[in-house]
Image (tube, rainbow, N blue to C red; front, side):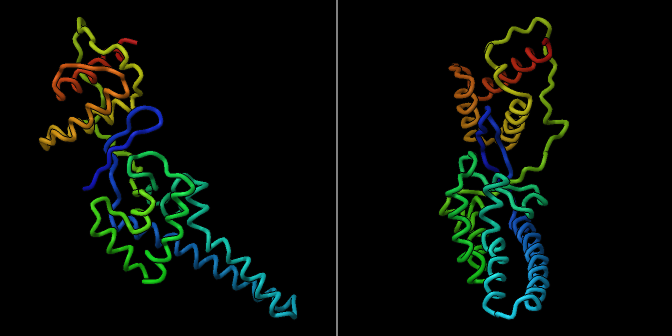
Length: 241
């Protein structure tokens, strides 16, 4: 399972799952099915125009205009729906920058242009090979735009809830933990538990630095002690509000 540390516009938003090759293919196939439906509608419209117009060039021009939405489908859908097409919506995935920030219209433009290489010219083989051999499952367009496709499915489990037993006489150390939302605290705890379970001290340290930057704190505590204290402090304030 590949995971990506993500920083939201609000606070922290960590440990998102990068989607698998299969999920990306399924999303593409859903979009492709919509193309076939639209092509069928355009074909019916062309037959109607052939009966209405005697000039073949007029019919051809109108047909090409009707096909434009398909040509620019990926571009305008990503821009309008924040990194998602209909297929991505169905699969609950979206495009973001590698650092987790929202992608810009220029990034979507790069992705759209390089679909020609990734998908259409070589029948998807270039894009597929690029995804398979990439650590972050990026196709050529993703590498050029600096983007990844992540899952937006909810992964909340009982073990990931933020509730903990806090003693009545507990004294919080970091008073500004109230800047965090419940979602932020849950994601911090989820990433913390994963790092502890796998002895991933690099991720734990990165998490600590991320939380420190958000809360604007500085502490001599070790990484594990620091995160544990932040979570306890958050529980203290939220349970006594």
